Image 1 (cartoon, rainbow, N blue to C red):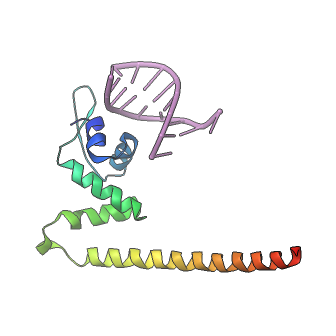
Image 2: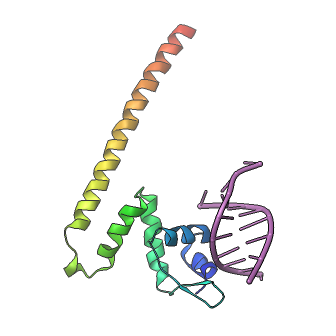
Image 3: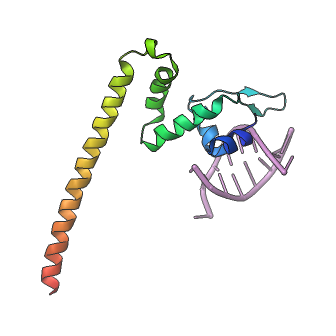
Length: 117
DNA sequence: ATTCTGACA
DNA sequence: TGTCAGAA
């Protein structure tokens, strides 16, 4: 299938599909005319990648994760569990940062409110 | 009409 | 990531 068809089938823009390929997340054949030719089975893989990006993972992390997700459960090593645990930790740290920022802003706002009255 | 690459008021 | 250009 061509890139436009894959885009329609997966809901991922052609721009993103080319980006995925640039970063080695997906592969494609080329027609004599130079057009990308994807296997229709690529649809689910692309959707998976989209979800991982939405979770804030980097393309390099996704690249490490994909082999694990596609390998049969028996062959899955602990790297997947380790990577995911690491991402969870990263997001929790980010949340703590945001909470800190909220505290300082709320404190500043209450001070400001008092002086304006 | 569709895709390709490269670039960004 | 969108989008536009210029070419195929």
